[in-house]
Image 1: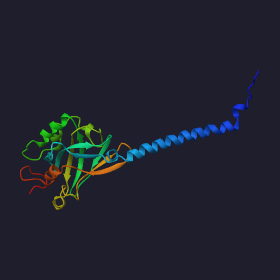
Image 2: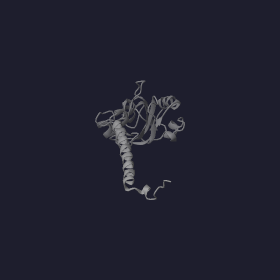
Image 3: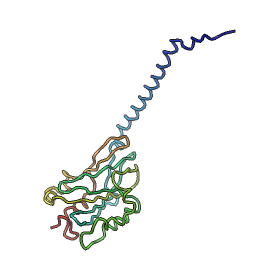
Length: 215
């Protein structure tokens, strides 16, 4: 009868092979992760998402608010190969962001009509925003799907200094507001906001609609 020695399972030669194999699997797994990250880094669509101008080609709409504020809606189209997060909209010389939202679906059409409707003068922010459903869920920071189609970037601005806006308006290439984005792998990028016509007109004001800095 053949018997197995109780010490045979503890053969030093066999023991040496076990951690070596585990180390090899760990190295292989780490290499796979590095390869995936390398592929992601090589993809501009993953690491450099953006919000481009809307397909309609309109510059957006705005409505003057009370307290030297203005509400600006710009239609944009996300350009990305993976979901990303829109964290914030940066300020511009002479104005700062009070609140910002990214609205989708039917809210865009309703909001376009509401914000773009003629008014007799500035309205309060609560009235202007009352037509937007589920506004709290759309507040920045918000996750943006990779291919959601056209969405609406809605920003409530407060004007601090009309002279600064006049000297270098938000549509000036040197001073566009930056969109702060976070990619699916956690890196952060800043991209200039598109379609600045409505933002420029809204902050600087015009003869017809008025505005905080209208002459």
